[in-house]
Image (cartoon, rainbow, N blue to C red; front, side):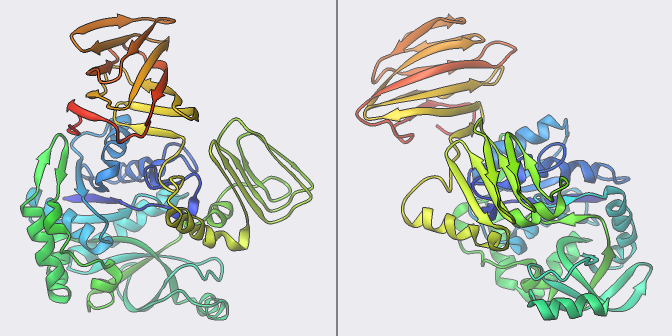
Length: 470
């Protein structure tokens, strides 16, 4: 059985301000149809005799992954939740343990959820070519044939053929400097390290047990003491804290004698920075990649993306990245795209929230947009999905006014339950136990005006919640 294992726990900090901790790049529509996560899932569905995917995701992203799988009508997927990040080696071990519950001979196709592949047919062919080696016990990785001297990727040095399109891995090489990268391109025997793999689940655990026994033991304990919750497999947090943080490359692939590589050209990009996105996208006659409301005058080789209703206008500039969202704007030189992470680090250090949350915050029941805020008041636009419900809750420090813009709202306020239609409103007094539900078949949209001495999201006491947050 071939089981896709999709790793979706990354934070995507180099694509700030669009990618943020609570809505990272894999769950965004960055390029092409659907989100990067959904594109990854769809690619696996093109493979013959493939099972439903196993997704390893962060606890914070559980409903994002579930909703996006639902949008694709994917049946039978399993979502394993990591309580905290521990890198790729433990994440893959969790997926392998889950896969072995289904099939002792399970083959795992390990795919990061945030990669872009423009040539799906070549990718599918490479997976087919890798199957014989994986069935023979090799740990197969996919090497991307380089088309430029790239210094932002690790490389794989190929050795002799082991049959078919597969080669034994001679060496994994760290990110090189520019002259070294040029020599690798000229040599022709090096491929980019894509971070995609194919191997038997049992073989991976065997190698992990040989080269990182403490990690495997800790992962096994955390998985065994976990529990199922709704559609998720929750790994035990106390046990998972003991798991060492390490990548599959360092923990296994650089140590095993059974590493193989399949070279492939499939228009691959890890979308690791805004400059990488500019390289992978379509350009106008001046070399610009533009999205949203943009105006470019005497502008060349730049990436311009407006993710709100504000226009971006540039005049007389070259090689820039300009990205606008409702609450933040990034302006950077394309050559400095990797340093965007430093902005995120400074936001964290200063106690700001723009590295974690967008102005529009997604919740399992829908979303809210903070339109305006001031001393003792805040205005939000709330959208509740059909059939969805917020938790039964109360606030110690604020009252709320709700005005229905469209759809139908079922309101619980203390001992009363009533319906509100378009243009109707209600008042939720401070301390009242209340709930908002959408009983209809279309989204419910309302404006919420909060007033009080403290308006933080942590002023919520939940009594009942269908999403397990009470």
